[in-house]
Length: 413
Image (cartoon, rainbow, N blue to C red; front, side):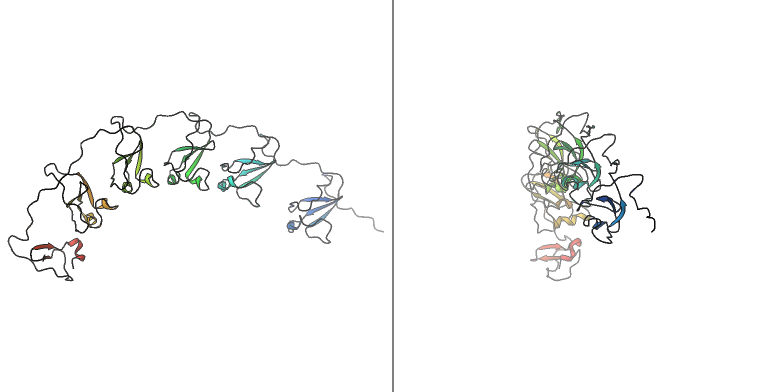
């Protein structure tokens, strides 16, 4: 008979058997298990079946390949650790905590790291629960606890937390708030969302930038004041008023100034409305009332108000009208066309009208214009549908003369 040939062995340099096969455990290609004193290796090509098939039970099994006999156990090899220089486990995962990219947590004795690319999901996904989780990456096992390291603080020179976040507050870029012992700053790019998205909101990361942990409260700092040389509050904001750039109002004891490229929005939104920050700037606090100053007047040499604005008239550059004892003048140039489209206090009124100042009473009558002193008489009577052009003159009722305005001649017929 033939002399027996050498049987395959597991590993001459690492004697012993690997762990016993456990049905349902997750095995990957190349992993080895023992069934009794026989060693099997999971094939990479059919690794998906390794958790489902007990090695040696199925003839010609494609999932498990017999390597040979083994005896004893394999000496354990070093496993991955969380941090060899700082042994122990990081804090346990707590759902809802505002984790950021690079933060590490423990679930039991397994360490996970929050991915920077998907950090928005880290507060809401328990590590290890989802297969192929892009938010948490498994780092390895750990034991004990990690020695505390220095945490980022809000401001080492100003210890304590800023005021707690309050939804609906008119936060602006640069404002700082506290939320669950963490300090956050309202970002300039998405400042409009800060009043309505808390720092732990699913989209709050765009609006609030995390500054670090904080404890206690901040010592009060000096507040901005409205005007040290002119104490008191300006008039209270009144919705519907035609505010213009430079106007100041108060809401409670806070002063706001209408300014910037979006001053027109001061007529649409109040200082503390959603959208109000586009046109209103917070100047600080105030107390009492401002002593009255001299008001601009319409014309000291010609007291009284011009005619009340009438939306049926075709105003031209230089025309003056009054609205609620305030005088407005139709501006010159191409924009005078807007005087026909918008009234002085309409949303688009600033495009065609300049505010002159207040007035009282009415203007004394001036001499009425005449048609033509050198050519007495009336031009032809107006006939609807006639193709009139700019400069054409017509009469109505044989006594009043009108001229077709060149800018709006399309409407003269």
